[in-house]
Amino acid sequence: DTEVTQTPKHLVMGMTNKKSLKCEQHMGHRAMYWYKQKAKKPPELMFVYSYEKLSINESVPSRFSPECPNSSLLNLHLHALQPEDSALYLCASSQRGADTQYFGPGTRLTVL
Amino acid sequence: KQEVTQIPAALSVPEGENLVLNCSFTDSAIYNLQWFRQDPGKGLTSLLLIQSSQREQTSGRLNASLDKSSGRSTLYIAASQPGDSATYLCAVRMGAQKLVFGQGTRLTINP
Image (cartoon, rainbow over all chains, first blue to last red):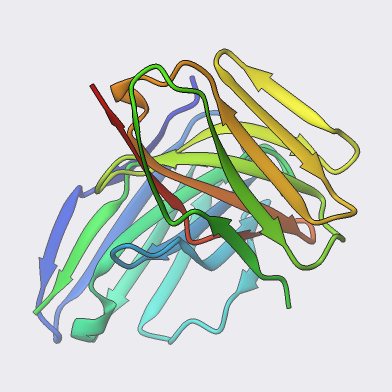
């Protein structure tokens, strides 16, 4: 099973809302990633967790807060977002950092 | 800073043709290179991963090559089908965990 699941599929939120994105994998992978993808652009790395510890933060604004409660689960907490944060948010995982990354289907986020 | 370029940005060919997608990168100090496909509004599907010590990888009708010294990779698709229509992205791995993506090639296969 090479599946990464993401919920919700779609999310619409106002600029004052707090919401969370969830990502789950049961492949025993120890590295998990959040990417942001704008329309017709490639994915941009946001965060990397390795063995449940944050190893890379690509200078992401603090209104995005990642969390890795266990080795299978990755959350992205959202607060006070801006309309320009509207994008497809992709989660990925890999066995180790240098291995093949497997991507989830993404959450389409719209900020009003 | 690593820069990844994919040419062409878009390609439209009739069904059945063989085709080549190109990817170039500026810094040859890579761990590996991965090719993905992405359907509109969907996540990425991994197609092939080539380690920096390898020259090519094959999976079904797909063949990817890597020339690290010249900073180039190609993805060859044989006997193209309408279901191959998608955006194809190449990504190079810099360091242990970071992928740098190209802008992608939008491929359309016409029946």
